[in-house]
Image (cartoon, rainbow, N blue to C red; front, side):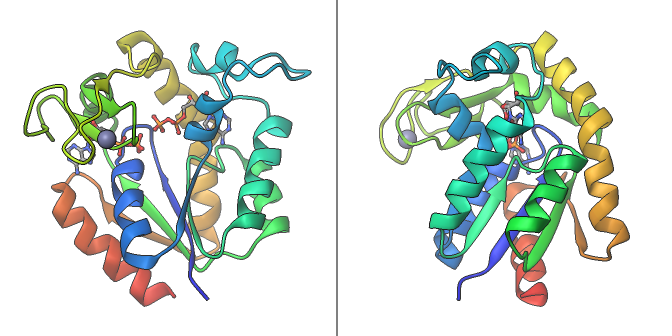
Length: 209
Ligand code: ADP
Ligand code: ADP
Ligand code: ZN
């Protein structure tokens, strides 16, 4: 059985970057609510479209997100879950539908997050992510992995980033504390280089599973 891994951290902490490596090494699926919502951002739900929340940096309502996660986890034989749960009610829902083997937390100071997010560039073909200063592609604007075009996410503007960090502190910090209190959380210094973080991530997975 492949492991069920949860990766937690603030917006910009490096969850997507590390999750990509996890999927390759441990042969698990990357389940990420952010990507799933972006792929369905104009879908009409009884709560309005996901885009109407995402562009403001607010959380998409729980019923919409819970349904996406349930379906994705049912289909996955081993996963790394990234971007969920973002509040306590999502954490309770998750506990009802699955068992986790490892809970990782990428610890990054708030002061670092704004620069990471406003400088983020994402491949519009394969989703690989880069940074204009910290993680540059070989050729500016072009994905190393697939040659796709690198674009800036609509919600990676400074104003929306600041709101996302505020929403994180209010709603998601209690989720971190919840797993910490349960003794399940492995804290990783997310301010190291991506390769150093990756070393710690592998150690944490291998000692938890
Ligand atoms: P998250 O999924 O947690 O929001 P990302 O993995 O998308 O975070 O990373 C946010 C930005 O920071 C991206 O531009 C990425 O290239 C960059 N980044 C990721 N990890 C590091 C790191 N360890 N040091 C510096 N920059 C990083
Ligand atoms: P980041 O990589 O910066 O952490 P994500 O791609 O995970 O951002 O999420 C982008 C946006 O999608 C969030 O700001 C929020 O509007 C929405 N979203 C993603 N996951 C959830 C979730 N679990 N609950 C509610 N909204 C979510
Ligand atoms: Zn690409």
